[in-house]
Image (tube, rainbow, N blue to C red; front, side):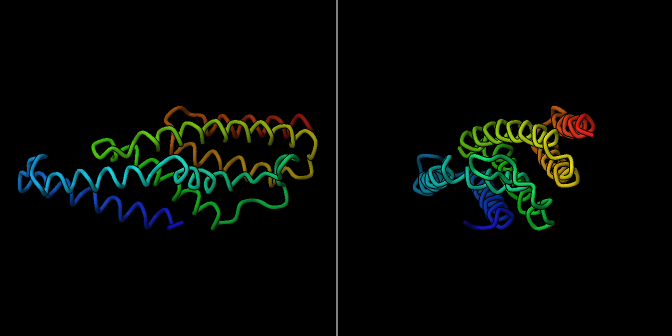
Length: 176
């Protein structure tokens, strides 16, 4: 999988250039060049399908790793690299929604962002439960919640990030 930051830069460059060519030259959609650009947009939109974008959502969720059928992995706080990769992944998804509308890239990324929000919410609930059962893991639990909150602040304009942190801290205090 290409790094999200590189993919964002390349796709942003493509969008800027294709918009520039279309507006500068004034190509008609039914001209050979216009048809070629529309075909390219369709090919890129097809490549940016839900399966592909879900990999970026998983990269974002790495700040709150899970052990299958067991719950949150509380071995360590997210590293700087994991946080950076997660940030790049959500910025890529956000860019697709913001700039991809005109190019047909936004629908799958919007669905992925909505699903990612549900997954973060679910994992925050798991962290709250883990906080009640594992008060010794408080620093890791808090670090994971804060990392998730940073991602939410980047993606959503609804204040859910700070709410997640308050919820986890409240669960940690209740276990003390």
